[in-house]
Amino acid sequence: MFDEVYDILQQARALRLENAINKNGLLRPLDVALVGATGVGKSSTLNALFGSNVAKVGTGYEPETQFVSEYRVNNVFRLHDSAGFGDGKEADERHAKNLINLLKKTCHVADEEYFFVDLAIVILDGGSRDLGTTYQLLTNIVLPNIEADRVLVAINQADMAMSGRHWDYEKGEPTPRLLEFLKEKARSTKARIKEATDMTIPKPVYYSAEHGYNIDKLFKFIIKNLPENRRYIKR
Image (cartoon, rainbow, N blue to C red):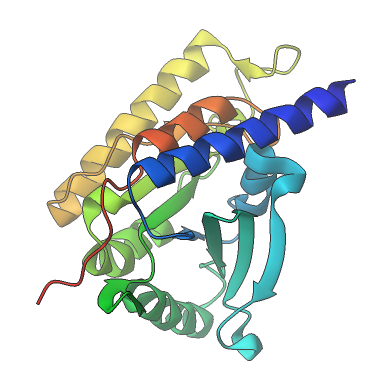
């Protein structure tokens, strides 16, 4: 019974996402770059959001780099999961180059040229005190190559934000003390990005893919911040 209800929820999310994309007149499928350091839980996030509706359909533009795994939720939403950063200077430089190429890639539709990727979702590790790799990724690679209002930041592993303390494992949610810590983490993340890049992004949402905490809020965050138009190439 639980599995049936869970599947219905995932299908409803996929349909709602499809309706929102169609309403905004975006390119179909909407191509989204999923970015983050190694171990932030990108795959678990996709599973928590869309469950078995997510189908891996291919790997990479350059198979030998294993740079991008492509996931299709439905006919109008496609995610490109980039290789994790933070595994060494040489690997990071290769991944950075490939990510820039992805964000700058173009496509032609009805004699009009657009950028291939319309949205970037960057996932931070809420359990890590050292977010330097991800901040560098944001400030040096992502934001210089896609508009700030097309960049969403989400903080996973909310349960580990205070090293596992102040998390109510029975209820699967943070205690008031941890909740305040998470709210401040979201505020400070937005402020730090603004200070480093002079760009304003939507305030990050925090969640735990492992415990299913705030997953619905994460989904609504994505829906609310979908692009309102196609990503035209400015001449």
